[in-house]
Image (tube, rainbow, N blue to C red; front, side, top):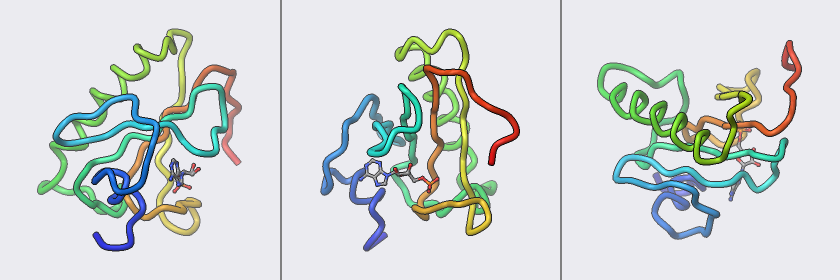
Length: 113
Ligand code: AMP
């Protein structure tokens, strides 16, 4: 999608620090990390948010979750980590392209703010 920063990262038009890539998805380090490990996993095709997941695109989301588990292992997050996807205005989503945050390397707090 034109003007989507994560579409541009997926297309290699904007640089990112990639940690994993395949035909369907990309994982790269967050520019503004909230923990020692903070990685974003995105589908290469544009999906706006979790709210747009349906039967037509659910396969890529399942694939992304297996990639999340692999990336977490590769990053040594053996003590645990958190996977977050912010959705829409109240969910504090700032980039309208589906992404899952992998956050780890420190103790998390609950409930989230
Ligand atoms: P969210 O607020 O859940 O939509 O998450 C968007 C995330 O994208 C934030 O954590 C930003 O720090 C991150 N971000 C924005 N632009 C870039 C970029 N060019 N490279 C890496 N991370 C980015």
